[in-house]
Length: 482
Image 1 (cartoon, rainbow, N blue to C red):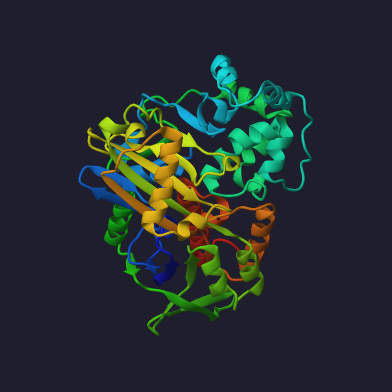
Image 2: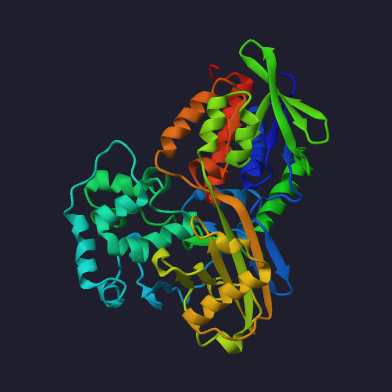
């Protein structure tokens, strides 16, 4: 078989992971494949950006990934990064939530609705006795219908009551998706809760059963905390990926923007994809992967399939920001505790959350400094991102002063804005994805991947990239009907 060519548009973690999986699977099957990855920006990795300032290590985008989703750990192992993986610190695991202007401890286990000790849960002050009693009614409330979709807000209010939703659940969900729980799809964001309700008739009973029946951790493997990172920052994952791809002969091109996409008949049931670049040149390939944001993919696909373009336009995006601030340890050590805090929307603060980065992670700051990472923006809260850096920083510092008593001058600060960076899985998202798949299926060798579709986390993007690579290779080799 002659060499086949694939072009991947988008050099974030999704595009790079797709290229890696393509090379890996093609080599295993003895398929000769030429792969090119195009990135319009000036660097690889998308939102994975690590800054190293002396002994400070800051993350402009994500700072960790879930260890329970194996794709991230597996890719690190394949790239020789397993010995660089780090767990969160063993001490100070407390987290807090803001209520009525004060920080209250979030009892261990509350995130999974199975508190390990009921005493701290009852004494936390997060919920009134009425709110606690309403939350407990989850064990007797009938399950919802199996068909259709539901918003996160509707689901959690129905199962646990308005108080638990507003004070605890909403800020936890907003911290993950930077979205509005009134609009977010339950099935697309937290399908496990839907499955637990359908199987057990109760989230609490379902989580308790899952905990009881959980298999023991595999022996011989390092124990991992829920979130893990890399010792010198997540950008090491991007560096290792690009180095490996280059060694494998993948062509990596930065500063290369695609202006238009055309298709032409290649052979019966097959297409050739022609990309028109911003410098007027063109590239052609038998297969094409769009690992770009949904709104970018929409413009490229609209001439081919207006239906797909319209469906992609229906995926909204939130803009967010991170602010990393380092303080002298002697001035803040007495007021920071645990790993950080989250802020419910009802508190009407600029901050969404804050992490005491140097307390949560090793190797993030010198011993005489405390590094804090603050989160701002999101649906309905993104006006702050339009401020200049000094004014935005002043707003964040004002909240830290009011909530934590941090009054001292920072020794370092940086502001990072991510415009239209976080896709929103609104109600009906999965149904729209099914329609999108049907619209794109007319073009064998064409695929979409990335955070806009089936998971926003790093492991989700890596896993979807691998599945996309497998589908593309099957199209190219004719392993499945067109």
